[in-house]
Length: 278
Image 1 (cartoon, rainbow, N blue to C red):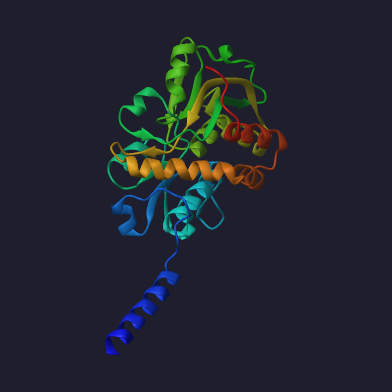
Image 2: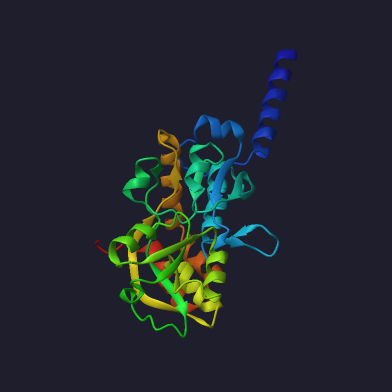
């Protein structure tokens, strides 16, 4: 009788404990043991690149990629709070990952061969071109008009190589953040500011004295950055991205963060349709 009572109490305790533990999403591959034991997943996000990621009124990150990161926390542990988010700059993203400060980079990270040598990537979740924003009074109408001029760019931006390879004599002033770049452009320290297309079009909708050179540059795809040699985590992240797309996440997220209909439509296309042939 005592043994039976003990068994029943143990079973009841286990049931209560299970009920108090957030459940991982059904059908997801297992998390790596280290992350599972930690009970939290550390994700680097952008805090200066709306609508992907920026700083909200309460000082916390907000944006499409930020919500993606939170949803990964839900898939992993049943709670968005289990995604521990850190703001990362373009320059610091990969060092933060490989240095063990974060588990994933979800921060406008373009995939290209040089990066694939040092980190792994998830499946692609977004494609788009980059663009240049200039003052409305600028004579620049197309990208070749920037030849011999100075453009502003965030340090570590993926567009640097394309600009050097495709626009003769272009000069680049590399700055720490998007805010620094916009401020320098307004101050006349460069002819234009270059960045991911979604960011640039969003800036244009917020700064009436600036306009976008509509010709795109450097068609690229974004993925989530993962340290080399972590196949379990990659499988989990790939499954999470597939579920986000199947659940209609991107339609809701773009509507939530992008007011301008043209910008919203173009951004959504990059999330839900295949990229054009390069």
